[in-house]
Image 1 (cartoon, rainbow, N blue to C red):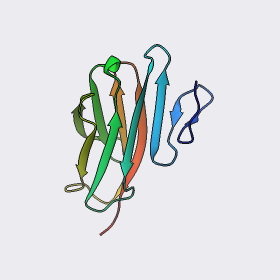
Image 2: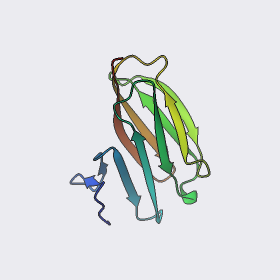
Image 3: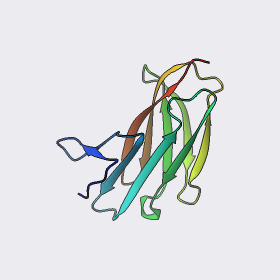
Image 4: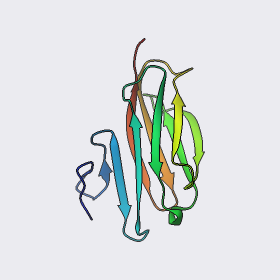
Length: 115
């Protein structure tokens, strides 16, 4: 699998978070799935940039709280490449996200800071 300055892989070849960006490649998909959240940590909102290959089909972004409860599910498409995550209703703390497509799955984390 190709290497990148933003990617670390575990012993099984799965992408791990580094520098707030993560990338996974599925050799059968012939494409890259990229997601970046900034700023991280954030107070009121964060910008989520993503790239989903058309071959990956339907995609969704699940947001989980620190206890693993699903807070929100956002459907994504390969045409739109940016969305804003509003912190209204989110308590300060650590959150996790999972970007799931037909061929890939990426997981990362972000922090909502205290005002």
